[in-house]
Image (cartoon, rainbow, N blue to C red):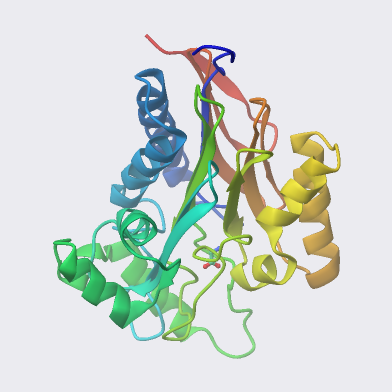
Amino acid sequence: MAGSVAMNPVVLVHGGASSEIPQDLEERLRQGVVRAATAGYKVLKEGGRALDAVEAAVTILEDDPEFNAGHGAVLNAEGTVEMDASIMDGRDLSSGAVCAARCIANPIQLARLVMEKTPHCLLTSHGAAKFACAMGVPVIPGEQLITERNRQDLEKEKQKTDAETPSPQKNQGTVGAVALDSNGDVAYATSTGGLMNKMVGRVGDSPCVGSGGYADSAMGAVSSTGHGESILKVNLARLILFHVQQGKAVGEAADTALGYMKSKVKGEGGVIVVSNAGDWAAKWTTESMPWAAAQDGKVHFGLHRDEARVFSLP
Ligand code: GLY
């Protein structure tokens, strides 16, 4: 590239901020985020754009039944799956999203089509379904997205008495990715089934630009996870980039904004952040969050607070 230095590409993914992950699930979640980060990194190393990398990574996590997005999305109060997703290109702030989408395998791909093929940013359930049909996106039976674990979790949740605490933050396997490509551009993608036992039609932060994610190549990119209503109230993703704009390092910016969300609205969550200089951070206020980052031929990953492992890609 004449006149500019190629950036060192990086991609980060998360598999949802969570308060209780069954031990037998932990290793599968680690493997899932590592697989997604590795795939996103391959796209970047082959000269692909940040936008392509985040879409590829999130598609893998949507297809993985262990995460709360696409196949494996949690069930709403009527026992059906309604999914939210959004994607944003930091080059020019173009963005696309779908919410309360049903009966498609990969909401993130439909969000990208909204971005690229319509003059709009967000399509809701019925409109999203009509648009998917017009774009030739296959309709699949909603049942195909449902796992036995999610069916049982909903049943258990519904059997709880009023005296027992409902688990509004349980089963948080929202997925997301952020990337910086060798041109210096950033992007984010976020996808979720939302909260288990949510009201029909409830929409969270994930399809909302500024809350569920943000990407601006002048600053960096963020993908959020956690309690959607809290994330919406503080515009979590844009708030983090505001702190980055003000000169904070990415990790400090994430901690500051997550801390604000906790003290102001008692909301918990997690984020992945990459700056346009290639600095990155994965932060959360819940107990754990599976995450992985690929940069310089290495994959870093973890799930618990004190855990940071690394291996070199072949
Ligand atoms: N953070 C995902 C949701 O609340 O829907």
